Image (tube, rainbow, N blue to C red; front, side, top):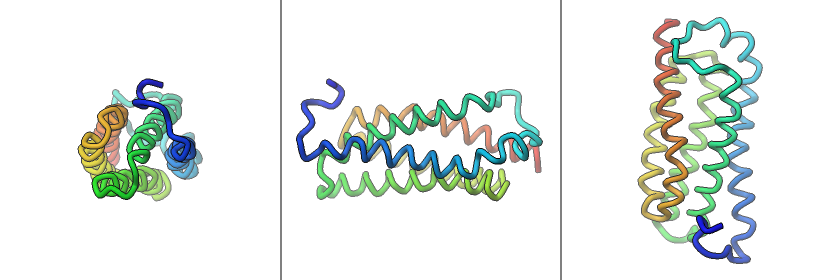
Length: 166
């Protein structure tokens, strides 16, 4: 595990599974609102030609949450009492809450407009998280780039769906 830069200290052992579980839980929360509407309401929406097939979203998100969990661990193990780590962790959890909230707004409330506004806030929160993580763990920040790219694509997709269905 060279990407972890050295051995994991005994007191840090619990941080890796906790980080992975917390990130996957955001996906679980989102899926409660997403899953029931995929085959019903979402199917009725006009979507752009670049919209991926529905089956692709779950494996992509599971993978992204896994990378986010490792990234969180790499920052968390630096010590939560350091001011820059505290700031990074606050930003990380803000974006994680925004991540789960998107499903509530887009699918739960069936509002592509609210989802689009919210995903723009999520995009900004991820960008700020990336910036602060890069000062603490280069690898931790690097692991967030696929997430940032996917949310950038998702924002374009969400905005297109809103535009096509207004």
